[in-house]
Length: 351
Image (cartoon, rainbow, N blue to C red; front, top):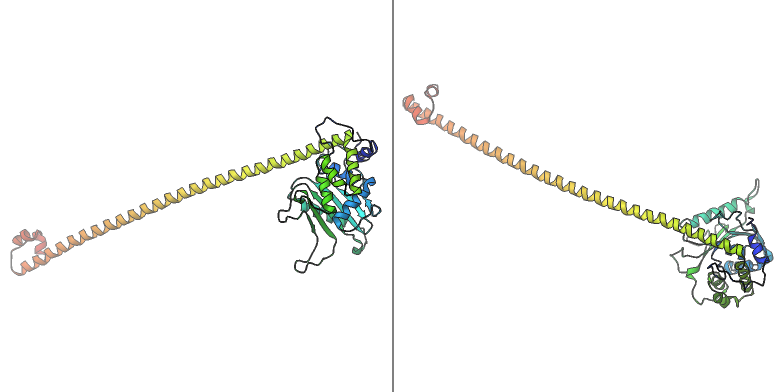
């Protein structure tokens, strides 16, 4: 079944006659532009360059006309419905000499800005051909509309990043710019063309759309395009598959995120257990050292007692010999000296 020109068929089939049609599929009456397939039908179709021009004027801050826009890829970039999460961005070139890449992003992806940087660099490199001068490189602007908050560092819903010098804030070359548009940060009741467009994109009910489209003819046209696309069964089928694919991808990321958290928790518990065992080992080593110290002190004490006993015995023996010598000098018989000192008669006779 051919999918490549689904956006074209969505608008030619029932232009101006779609509001009365009803579907029993549980989907919104008007399909949300926050789903990228609808976003691309709205802004990426050749016949909707007036809508795209008004949106670009609001984002870039200067007037863009539909005649100044050349869509690089005006068709829906999916040949097969099973290509679930192919990136449906909008590439265009402005007559003023800029390439622009627009993307509707659902989900807070940590790597989104690295991917955007890679895309910008790729679009710059692909401009160059053998022998071309670097001066021919045209600037590339990326515009990303986020359904979720991705920049907690700021409360501003619209940020522009470039290549500025950090201290004096002058441009290095002006070849790269990234505009981030965060729908959750859009202030309630905000006024301005960009606020109106983002309010339109994040609307969920017909009354929400009607409240904002009165301000602008391009937005009234945009609502007509949404109504026409929303009345096409093939578009609604694509919408269902796309929403399911996004939900599946979110579930997959949530699974791996939860698994990583569980792995971290288990690792922390293992570390805690190891620390407790290490503490126990240290306490056992400390106890062993204390016991060893006590044993050494006891051995040392025993050595001192033995030394004292040995010294005392030696002192008594020396005293007996001294007394024996004194009695010999007095002429006392050896038998008597032996009885008095306890020394043997032979030892006394040898003195």
